[in-house]
Image 1 (cartoon, rainbow, N blue to C red):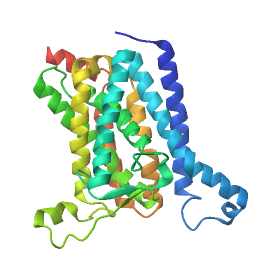
Image 2 (image 1 turned 90 degrees about the horizontal axis):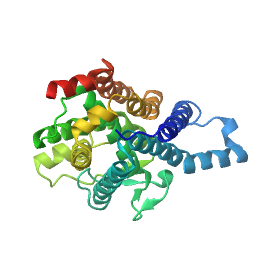
Image 3 (image 1 turned 45 degrees about the vertical axis):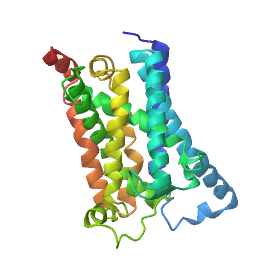
Length: 300
């Protein structure tokens, strides 16, 4: 097992900073950043501070999460496979997002605003595929505690499906929250001439979001995870990644902001469902600190 105490320290510090910024953002978007804005926020100085926060706050938070995920993964499995896993996850998720924003497949018709920073190809903010990477690291760590780990092809696909679902659970609250705060927008057109099935999956039904979004998340999550498991197989995740609580903390922290926005901005249903969706895999993963070891033992 390749471990590096210095990389683990970097991961812990980055996670703490990531959590602090996430907690502050959750507080801000559930209090003084809820329209109508308070008078004290209208001063020129505070307006400049708010503009800086919108410009760099989200980007910095995501980068810190990625540093935490990458540094921990490098500590757990070694620098080279960790970097390769990051590169593959970034490229594949970026490709899916570029296709989605350009063509509407696989997520539906949507577009990103300028709040998330520099857009690759003028379409996808750089920190979107970055967040896919570290949340899939967390999702695979959860799988390592809850699913038997073998390295055969069927098990890898099963892990990929489960990781895709665990990842998509995050979007139950995040999509309504980010649309509400105009980080991205749904651009669904007229579906009157479409088939009944296309209307069913393409019509906005959940706070402006069509079902195609979650289907696209699951599809992309499965394919990206399957590629990640080609580099780092399930037994390695279960043995070297899953026993740590750091990926679980990373997963939980990323629920803070969207859940706070949902509960504070009249989207209670999204908040409740999002809490349940993320809480279930976390609860299953936390039920025994030795679960990853038990799963490996059962597979032998």
